[in-house]
View 1 (cartoon, rainbow, N blue to C red):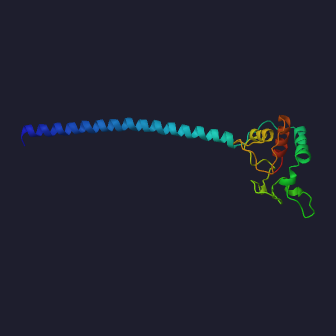
View 2 (view 1 turned 60 degrees about the vertical axis):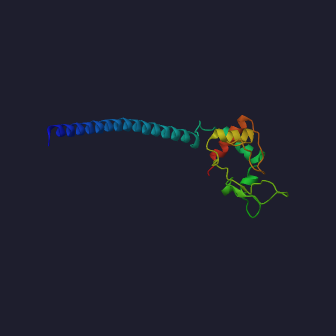
View 3 (view 1 turned 120 degrees about the vertical axis):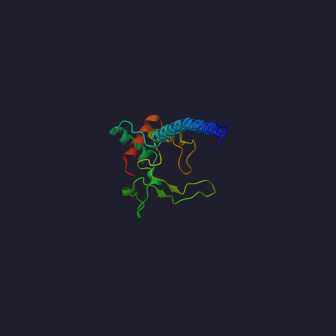
Amino acid sequence: MTKKRIESNVVRWWAMDADVFRLFRLWRIARKTRMKSKLFLALLVLALGLFALKIIIPARAEPASDAQIKRGQYLVERVAMCGECHTPKTDQGEYDRTAWLQGDVLDYKPVHPMPFAAVAPGIAGLPTFATDELAMKFMETGTNALDKRAMPPMPQFRFNHDDAVAVVAYLRSLKR
């Protein structure tokens, strides 16, 4: 081989090494960027998870007083009469106290076709409300978290704030 040919081969190898070095360097920079993206994504997922937990897990406020629970029991049992729909009845037509406010199939239907709930869900322990605030909003405004009204025959209650707190305290105190 001639000296010129050897030098050109060395220059080519050196140029290829430089190109490989540049590619490696770009890959490392891109890798760092990907790592930053992955870190950002992980932090975003963590933040969304914590936010979801705050919404999904019921807020545990200070324990309700006995007076609040008694007031709520009075409102649920004697004023709103929730047991009429939300508690199954025995063969004698009395409330089944072993399944108090555990939900029941409604044994009546409207005469005319209309949206109508065929089942009254269980409300003991308030399993359908993630937080006390959502339950109180429903008791105070008659609308749920999506600002939708409950299906008939559920009345659209408008309790004042203290009564809504008492009703929620009583219902949360019951076993599911």
